[in-house]
Image (cartoon, rainbow, N blue to C red; front, side, top):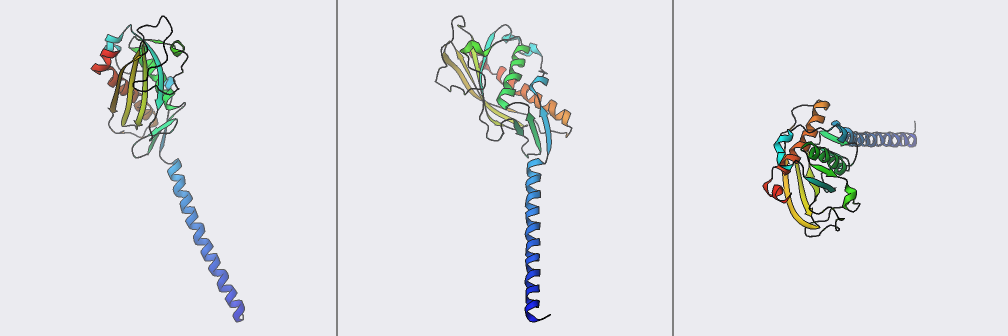
Length: 223
């Protein structure tokens, strides 16, 4: 092999070596991204499976009242449209619908469980639950005749993990803002990796959030 051929051989070996290193690095990046995207435990949750676990008698004072479940909104930046996580992102709770819809349907069951008559949202001027909330100090559209004294309930998620839920509740009555308050509901960290138990845990989070509202004295007075 002459000097020229030897030089070309060295260059080719260097290129193969560099290409191999780049391929390995690229593989490591893809593996890391794949673990980040698909790692952890996926926990499917469905509003149809939610059943309140608390006794209806705990909130007997609300029995017989009426409510319109108006806008539920998800403004929690640490969630996705239909999913929320544990703080370490190892657990992913995936709803079959958007989170605001999931909570809306669960709350409908919770209100009915304690004896509250949940009116169809169409009575509130046709505003579906997934529309944006009206905000403090901004009255909703006027109610149709015959609904004087009926409370409209709105909820906004501001932060959500499987250990802590921060949210805001607003009440309207007779076209006027009657109540708004920020809440925080907490649960202890999960002690299991069993998907069925984690699913049940997710439904208990709904119970904790609902109970935090119902036990609030200011809410009770405004409702």
